Length: 462
Image 1 (cartoon, rainbow, N blue to C red):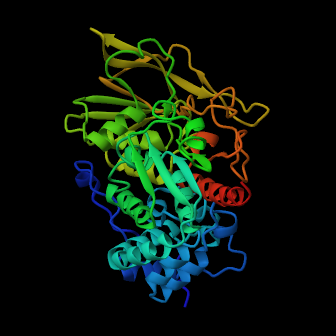
Image 2: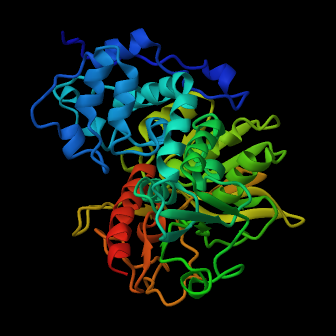
């Protein structure tokens, strides 16, 4: 029976006035009854646009949802893991509104789409709580006997690398993951706050790779501790996958940006997530309008000494690229948004930031591309008090140690075939943010899975 309600089953959440005082997960997850009720909203449409058009890894969405309606949650999990390595992660942090849910037929004609992300999260959490121990034993026994004499080095431990490593292990290939940080998980660990993605979720995924036989080498940096030549030569690897992300922050390029109290979002989030260190700031300004800016402002509002947290964004609400749900939750937690506002300079006293000089903006008429550019409003300058200014305007990739591989001239990204992830150097593959620049977790996973398939084919003939 189909639930014809146009309204999604609401997931329980912490109260905004409570959650902005802690780092516990904001969304509390569906109960089995809520999951079944929401799953029954699926229309079982013939063309499955949620799967074919909306999902980068083409999860079998109607099939796993159908299993939920039957109350067979483990079967639903098994359907998902045919195509995705990180359902508990993707169910929490993927921009479903742009992907699967954005293509859901139920979301047309004034209705709300099926809450596919919430259902994916529910299934993954149910499996972890009920079936984890038994499956790890089975996986380890099955794969240890199947390992071949081929081995692959994976650089980085973010979503692209984890997906690539998992698929290679399933095909019997030995895998070693090299991670420059001492903590594994890449952006999943140091870039996404605990209240959106609990670290035990990432640790569980890595534990699954350990059970399959992956070798982990944390604290090892490409270009410093080893080179591609060494990996493909003396160290005996048959191929290399580079999935080291895009962690090089872009700067504002304004006077005063070197003042104490000006930080990149990457630095701020890494300290908050890994070291549990939050600066004792009162007035905080986050410059940017993407999802990284949302993570930064929501961490900032949780600083015990914080009195005011503001997002500074030079375009209007209609152009803001952040997930609307994340923006709504940030505003519920007390974050203010200054639209059509551009930064001009950092105001300083004694070398420390005291404010952000800004100006009002307005949007021009559409240009040939149809895009309206922000232009300054004369005489509209003002100073926003700020003793902590966080730059969240994008990032590039650090690929200085990727020798013999073609890089893009402008951003230093690795140039790789979009279908095979093969770089210009034979035996070296790359995918995720290091190729595309900052994208979504699921798109990085999709690249990792494509790379694993291509690497396996490469190993058969080399």
